[in-house]
Length: 120
Image 1 (cartoon, rainbow, N blue to C red):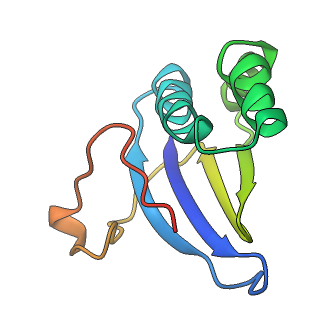
Image 2: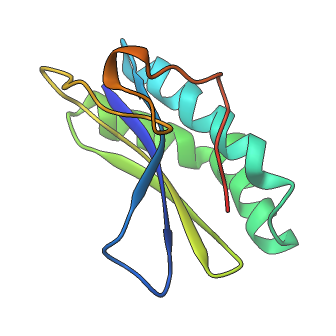
């Protein structure tokens, strides 16, 4: 599974910037990674969005539904909005993970702490 967190200004819909990436060994690991990132930013969201992220997606049926999607070979995503920016966590099945630059580092040295998401 290839997982990534991308951010973009709502005024520039096609200009995404990858702020984190993770090669998960299983759908379970992918969902854990997405949950960790979502939980990390939930406190910076408004009450309605934070409630949805925590109650529906992190602790509720949303992550289970996305787990089922991944098991069936389909991608999943969770998007939140704040101050004119969009942050999306995505996971998708892959056969081969291409080397990817993350956080401005060269591909071979691109490591991030679990849950580390750079948010404007």
